[in-house]
Image 1 (cartoon, rainbow, N blue to C red):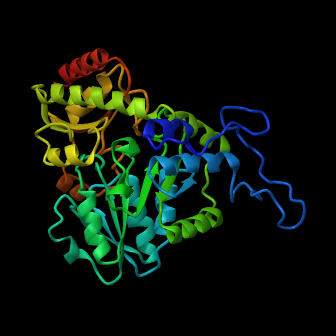
Image 2: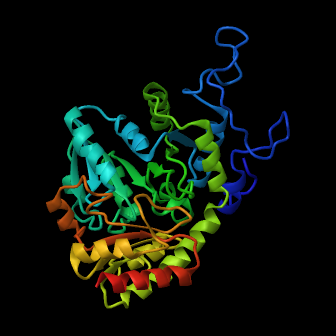
Amino acid sequence: MAASDRIETLAIHAGQRPDPETGAVMTPIHLSSTYAQAGPGEHKGFEYSRTDNPTRRTMEACLAALEAATHGIAFSSGCAATTTLFHTLSPGDHIVACDDVYGGTFRILDKVMKPLGIETSWVDLTDLEGLADVFRPETKMLFAETPTNPMLKLIDIRKAAAIAKEHGITTVVDNTFATPINQRPLELGADVVVHSMTKYLNGHSDVVGGVICTSDDAIAERLRFLQNAIGAIPAPFDCFMVLRGLKTLPVRMERHAQSAADLAAWLEARPEVEKVYYPGLPSHPQHALAQEQMKTPGGMISFVIAGGLPAARKLLGAVRIFVCAESLGGVESLIEHPAIMTHGSVPVESREKLGIVDGLIRISVGLEALEDLREDLAGALEASQ
């Protein structure tokens, strides 16, 4: 563990020491599937790599430190992490979730957990006035994304967690968009944090993974059991790659946010753009909360282009630096159409109610030269009309 608790130092050193045998500064990739035992049950802390692996353990420790958590439990994808988390519940239990979530999370709750007897109520958590009225005796979990995907709505973690705690309900925050660099939900009262490591944590669009962080020993013990029993674990090489990505996470997030703030203000002034969603803009409904709860507003922007789907298709076909692709959080800039791509599993009526209209575009601002990104969008916007 790093001696400092400053996040820039934790990102590079937390959970990591030079290899005691060779002195290797970087954590080795331990590919062995099994480990020698002196006798039955007499081992050095590792038995079988599904249960635990030295490279994975190091990565989990680093991620836990970044989220100010005691435990980090890693999985083979963000969806695997989320699904395993929901398996801590039992048939008949109830979840309250924010109405604007990643399409994959909606699919898990609606198509996987619901048939198993775990129901979800979808609530606009930007307004917490009536939250307690939505809770039932069987409500066990409050699940929130903030900022949400793709509408970039913000939820007051401190207030939401306090209300949930009064009713004995576990608060879970998907912190993928913000990362621990911009907000630490556990410090604001949440019980559990979940991430798609595929996105900013890895940051190079070459790993799929997920992680859950918590300081609740009972929750962590249950998750460890399920991690081993279900077996949706990340490969050692993927863990090594995420560790590499984490070392530059603080500087990457700073640059993502700087460029995104500039582009958001620029897009808001463009005649081809009807509306821009970015927490750093004064026009954002939760702009004040963003300043209070987040270090920076992050690197994600959503906007509505004039002309609906035809214009959106032209825009996505005209970009040259932005890549039309799903996912986000990499060093390269990505652009996508939520209604067709990332949120296609959400029913049309629900999408439109949330604002996920045919003209909505979501961009993940990368680390390229800001001037090049602006010029690329300008040409594509003109072509769209």
